Amino acid sequence: MTSTIVSSLNFATQQIAIYLNIFNLVTGIPGGILNLIVFLSLKTFRENTCAFYLIIVSLFNIGQLLTGALSRLLISGFGIDWTITSVFYCKFRIYLGEMFSLVTLICLCLATLDQYFATCSRPRWQKWSNIKLVRYLSAITIIFSSIFAILYAIYYDIIVSSTTGTVTCASTNAVFEQYNAYFHQPVMQGFLPNFLTALFGVLAYRNTKNLAYRTVPLIRRELDKQLTRMLLFQVVINIFSLLSFNIISLIVPNISTNTDPVVLAKLKLAQILSYCIYYFYPAVSIYHFYENFMFRFPLFL
Image (cartoon, rainbow, N blue to C red; front, side, top):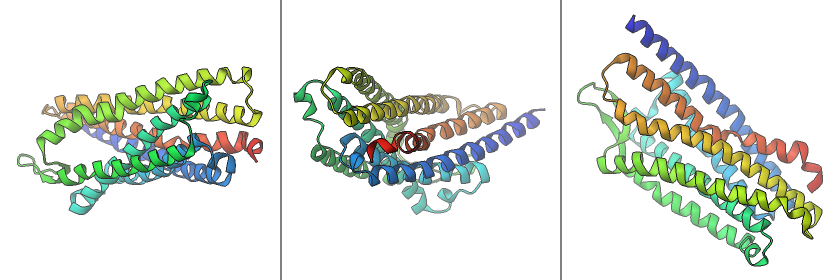
């Protein structure tokens, strides 16, 4: 009976890994590419500070899906795991994944903050929304994320369990693993970006409600409303994706010592589901394309 339950749970885990990751890839990658085409082809978007951040987010979202969701599809869906056969790939994958994730989350925080400044009624605050500053902050974000992610390349390696003989690509430093599990993932890639984007996204939305009472050109007013809606939609998806992933990440270390095969199978199912949900936030780029192109494109020609 136990073996039947475990087999069923393992089969469900495999199917979830296959279909949800395929969904993330077939929606996220084309959506990201179409976003880049729309944002880069229209002068209105190229010169807009918030749109500049979204261009970077779209580009790094594609990279995150290719290094994360595609690898997860191969590993959990088809049992093809190059991270346990190549030390270079083990380190390179975790490096790129962390770097792409940091860039997208930081730039999204900066985008909501910039949109708040851009829609603010006070000219003093509006001055903080300028393309020169945005380019500097974007460059700093990419450089910082690239350097910080080196820690993952240093501390991650192929490990063989002395008890089960299982080969994994995991952290070799206990202190760094504690930092990653209890601070970096839940705070730096969870609570903090969710709080900041939600706060400034709501404030920017409140500002757009007052645009009708200010002497703002029609095209600028509609552009600000559109970008604010896009940001709020992305914020909601981020909160759902990151919160689910972080909750599972905090629970897993406390249950993984259980030897019950059914419990371990359920744990693996929850873990794979959380991984798939995590990649929802870079996969919703297709919404941005429809918002920009299908419904609003003629306005900004």
